[in-house]
Length: 509
Ligand SMILES: [Zn+2]
Figure (cartoon, rainbow, N blue to C red):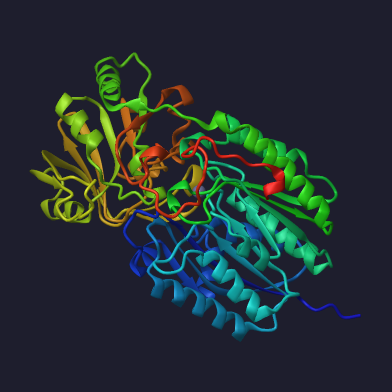
């Protein structure tokens, strides 16, 4: 008997859309990665790829088995932004489906998705993309996708895919492993497994800073889900949702995939969802007021014997669609005369370009946010010295960027009195030490590190800043975790905690 070599198509589309951020143009995807055909495969086979680590994990998982033929389609991603411009999303679907048609026959499709995208017209792009792929390959070909832990899952996504597997770690340091899980699911389906998925969505959103997985309620529910995996269950995904997406599909979700027994999948999904619902009061949070943060930074700067502190500007997280340039903390630390602080990273293309024109050692008046229209990105001016310049190209070494090639574009390190600020051209989240180290900064000498990041910084800086050195600061921003302040328009109501009397029972699912 001759065995045919399985032909597996690969693609990806990764965007987390903040419902209140400006639309994401194609340039944002191209500045992160937009890779098609052999260029995608070459990137994934390179030592430090740009494309999603889920694709690397899937390749590695498939490579552990017998021979297979990868058929690379389009993979693109833009981190987090606003809704993707509709024409850009339409192009993504057209390129993936036309590539897939040209590759037929295929034995399976793997997609690295985020799951919390919206487009300027379409509210469920991830569902639309999965349906378009399904329409090309028909009902019997495995279509398997990985999802970010912050996916806003729709029933359409679950129905059009064969298997959906979400991350289990936050910060997301398990993307390679989940890609490998997808490969093992693909191999099992090629061997005849017919997975059955159950899906439960709860009327519940949570502050993003309450959803870390090293400890706390979310860690507990993920561990509980994993404890239910046995010979009948392939995957349990407890999906945090992206509360700032502001879509009709918001809400925490549980997706359970059984290896064939749908009733078993339903029973486990309801069990996990009921436990999660019963834990909801544990997801409330407390942030530190700005005045308190200023006093703490003054003390840290004045007394080198104290523990250095990390201040998280969780409300301006580019990883959640923030502009990465609000100046609330910078202005307050600067006017208070804080010493030994490093701000990373401030997204300001004109300021980065001007610093490059001025050159290292130059003194000039740094005008922050001169070209930024968003009202929360207020202008700020200060006398500055250019301390270092770079092209912003580096390979990450810790956490979510480990081993990945990343570009910040033109980058400058500016000194404003006792404060230094890293100014960049591409909007990114400060979650990686190399973002500062490639400019010659010694992070261990920094007394106050201010990061524009919600939580992924924890995996980048946990060797220097332990949990008790982290201060989550309460300032305004597009990624505020104070849900009561978010101008919601589209989320389903009632929803907990905005509607505290919201009820739910497993029979409602
Ligand atoms: Zn995420």
